[in-house]
Every structure is written in structure tokens, then in C-alpha cells.
Amino acid sequence: MFKRILIANRGEIALRVIRACRELGVETVAIYSQADRDAGYLQLADEAICVGPARAADSYLRIDRVISAAEIGNVQAIHPGYGFLSENAHFAEVCRSCDIGFIGPTPEAMARVGDKNSARALAREAGVPCVPGSDGLITSEQEAVTIARSIGFPVLLKATAGGGGKGMRVAANDLALASAWQQASAEAQAAFGNAGIYIERYIERPRHVEVQILGDTHGTMLHLWERDCSTQRRHQKLIEESPSPRLDPETRTAMCAAAVRLAKTAGYHSAGTVEFIVDQQGNFYFIEINARIQVEHPVSEMVTGIDLVKAQIRVAAGEKLEMKQEDIVPRGHAIECRINAEDPANGFRPCPGRIERITAPGGFGVRFDSHVAAGYVVPPHYDSLLGKLIVHQATRREAIETMVRALKELRIEGIKTTVPLHLEVLANSAFHDSQVDTTFVERMLAG
Image 1: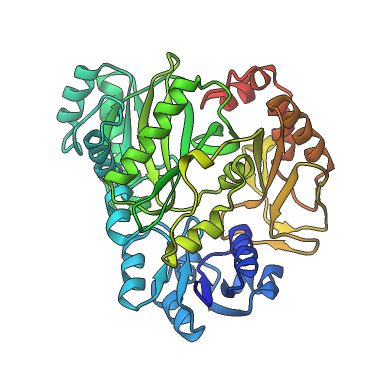
Image 2: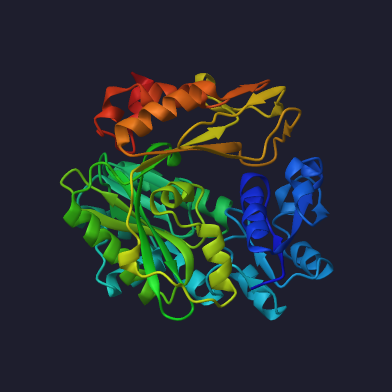
């Protein structure tokens, strides 16, 4: 086991890793930007090192400064959390060249699955169903039109290096496709430095279901069942739950097996997520692999009883997973609501500022993962996530009831949050009846 780990992240996930390390008896070094210098969780780390100004590009995304902090802190490994450098294969390679462990997959595996077009090729090799579309990247508008006509409109243009909905456009005909091609390419280049675009048939009103995977360096690859992330807005997840309420047992088993098969084909180890969409007929299709811990990992932890962050660290230290697939039996139902500093009533406008008062919910089956406290100033420079409210109960109905109660107990004063939106979603009959797809929230807000 490592003796000392650097956490190359901030906020909620940094605190989550600190807690896991403390329970493992591992010392931690936290990095921070000048905007985060007063963050309370820094006091829980054994050492804290400033890596630069507020802008992420000048601090959390500076590989040279993160590596320097690791060397100053005398650590054996780096945990990247999610976001920032967590899926940067070059960063993982730099860690290896500096003889610093990277708590995640190898640089080679990360490169294979990080590019969506390459990941689709791996999926086809592993016999995992993919949405009909181009075999590779599209090089011209005419090629896009030819493919779109062959698979049928509407189609979806997607950035091969994309994420978070950037570099994605839907086109319903030839004319719209030409405009969508230009917009998606330009947005992908600006956001990721890679204008590569591929094309898929657009699946209308799909569900978004993902499988949590966990593998070691000794050849073991497991799944921790699935999460349903269909409640989202503009491709940004809002509510996640496990198990998915509308998957039949046969589809669930096939999807999880496909995720494990794909991870083995990619030579993957560590924690990761294989994401799928499910059409209205119940067919599932691969969309991407996230080579890191996910924001929504707690719902899988709650239903399986497995601490994923601890497992990540143990695997990176070379330990063998002691569990077998038959040992991982999901129990009950878990739901997570992302609490963001945003104003849903005003177009989800970011709401940085000082939190004057906060009251966290509690009680049986309630967990609140958050780094904020009264007096904390939410900076405008980063993602607006304040925390994750997670509940776990024996049934989905009970989990919804507990979540409503917990959301009403959660008081965050001084800034606007997404709590009112979550209460509105949970009160909607479509959510209760599991009739939710990836466009449900937009339709609800429009209505």
C-alpha cells in the first residue's frame, strides 16, 4: 500500500479521497489554487500545496506544477479524481516517467478508450452493439451526407474527443447537416483542440444507462451493476439511480457482460464506467468509456457495499481484488441528486458567492458528500457542484420518499441551488412511473 498520495483535484472529490486515504492509513497531500486557499477540507490533508492562480489552466491543469507538488510532497502516487487531468493519457504517462503511481488505468488503455471513435472500434471488436453510424471520422460534408442518407435521418454528429455535450449536433436533413457539421467541428476544436467528428443515427428519447466496472492488474475485471442517468439537462446529469428501473433482467445481464467484455478488450484496469443508451424498444448501444471515477459513483457504492475509491487505491498499489462477480449482489435502491450552485429559474445561471448558512440532512439511508460549509465562498472559476445528496432504501418508492424529505431538510442560504428543480422532478408522475428519458427535463421545463 502507498504511504502518501497526492490528490490532483479539488472540492467534493478531493475530500472524498482524503477520507478514503485516512481509513486506509495513507497520508495525503492536497493541492489547491489561490481561489481555494480557504477551503476547509485542506485542513484534513496532511499537507497542502498551492499550485497557482484561480484559473484551472494555470493551476489544476498545469501538469508541471502538479508533478512538482508531488515531488515536494514526497508521494508515491497521484489520485486525479474526476475532471481536470483525470482522463489525460499524457499526464498518466508523465506520472509513470517520474516513477509516481497513477491511480487509474494505464496511459495506453486510457488513450484507447479516451477517443470515442477508437472506443467504438474496440466495442465492435468485443462484439458490443454500437449505434449505426460511420466506421471512422468524417472528413467532409459530402461524406457526412452520404452516411446520413444510408443510416437514415435524423443523425447525431459527435466530437471524438468530446464530453459534456460539447461538439454534438442533431441534423434532420441534408441542409441541417451541413450547418451542424460546421458547428460541431468548430466547437470540438475550441473545446478539445480536436475537430474530429463522427456520425451516428440519432436515437430519439433514449435512456442513458451506464455500467460501473472495476478491474485489477492481475486479470480480474468485474462489474458493479448499472446506474440510470437519464434525468439530465443538455447532456449534463442531474439525478442518477441504481438499479435502472426499466431494464429487464436479461438486458441488465447482457449489458453488464458487454461492459466487462469491452474493458478486457481494451486492457483496462482500475475503476471506470461503460456508458450505453437504450432505445424505446429496449435495445442498448455503446456510447463511451469514462476512464476514471464518476461523480455518481456513490449510488453503486450504496447498492453493492463496495468503497470504489478505496478499491481504486488498492488496485493501483498492485493488490488483487479479493471479490468475485458472484459476490457482488445489489441490494435496495439508491438515488443521487447533484446539488449545484445554479439558478434553475433563470436558465441555470451559475450562482457563485458566499454560503451564509448550511444545514445538511441526515437520518437512516441518507448520505451528503460535500466540501462546503457556512462561510464558504463558491468560486466562479470551476464546476458549480456543491455536493451530492444520496439516499439508499429497500425500494425505489421508499428511496424517492427519503430523497424528498432529505432535499427539504437541506438548507443552503446565500446562493441559489438546484434543490427546487430536484423536488420538481421527484414530484413529477413521469419520474415516479420511470417514464424518463434524456429529454424529459427539457420537456418538463418547457411545459
